[in-house]
Length: 437
Ligand code: HEC
Image (cartoon, rainbow, N blue to C red; front, side, top):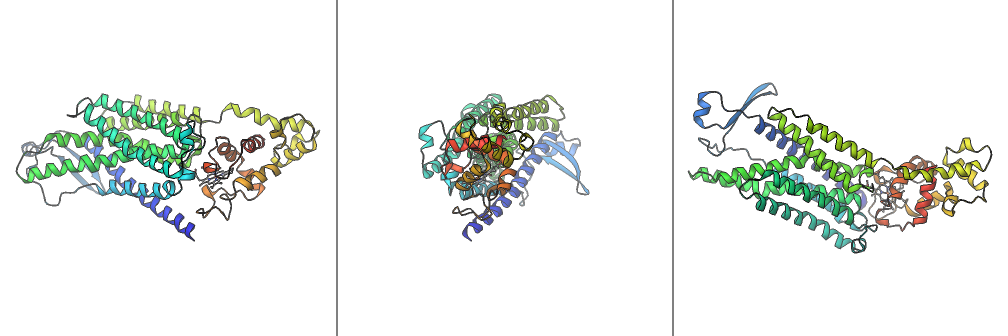
């Protein structure tokens, strides 16, 4: 029951998180579009009032006339509309989700026993949890320091973007070394999302509050507050597409279990940024197709890197060899079951021990020992209420059905999570040889 309530809570939080994020990102994209579509006021009245730019739009069965004043509107109405709860709700619900999944079960979501760094591989759950949160906090501090030092008066935007880009490459690489791939992608995305919400919380909203207070006191607002708010919201714009990818990547294990995981992450981050750049420019009336083309090239590179490697081929040859030894069995070799039996019949071949043992019976025994605590119609692993990712491995048919996926997650050592059921390399070799059939 507890495990079910946990699952249900997870679903409700995720629902809230996605809806808040849609509202926030949608509004943010709208305001960037609005800002970039503004043109100087055409009538005398607007000019006299000090309107900086305006846009007409038709939507929802009516006409809208937006006007932007930089820091000097003639009067401020009492019912000024502010936007920040969408951002805060997105971050808070996201952090809550991160907590109930990753921080509550760090031993299998955050500890990476396969890390190339021994100190990382030997961290306990608490240490891994603290390190993950430190990534968010320290990451934001470094980002914010870059903004303040490189661009104290909102100058050198190009250099600042370059520095932030390099920082994200470093974060992608570091997280992939330290954490399991799935957590690495999530933490990198969560860091970007934290920068976005912190920009709203620490800079954009306080700056706007100072501007409003100055206007109410009859003073001229500090133009730097406006410019800084603008700079940080421009950063947020370029973060949005990469963040959404990094959150979605969690459902596509080929991204984060790839040996090129950090490069895939970097390529996606830059693809998202350049695609966004195209739309930013487009709203300014410039149609620069080079940007989406660059985005597509980066995404094609991801596909090329992430595609199953040809190094899998030797394993796939094993059953063919085994089947050849038993006349008449080749036609049945397609089903794992037939190939396994054929191999047993041809008992005294010279294949390595792990290949020879790659029968469905052997695989099933491994799956029962290492996987079905979680991947069962009735999981027995504490805290798992239903088969994770919908993958049930109770029967041979189910195991055969998921063979390709099993091969991938076992080969990359992503499963069993945190190797909590202590799967051996030999068993992984058996699975690889069998699934190759
Ligand atoms: C401690 C519990 C646990 C054990 C043991 C475990 N898994 Fe998983 N598995 C999970 C969880 C949780 C997920 C969902 C995480 C995700 O979506 O990446 C998952 C996801 C998967 C997926 C889907 C990955 C994808 O593409 O999204 C496959 C395939 C899988 N496991 C196979 C296995 C195999 C094979 C074993 C045994 C060698 C195994 N798992 C052992 C918990 C476990």
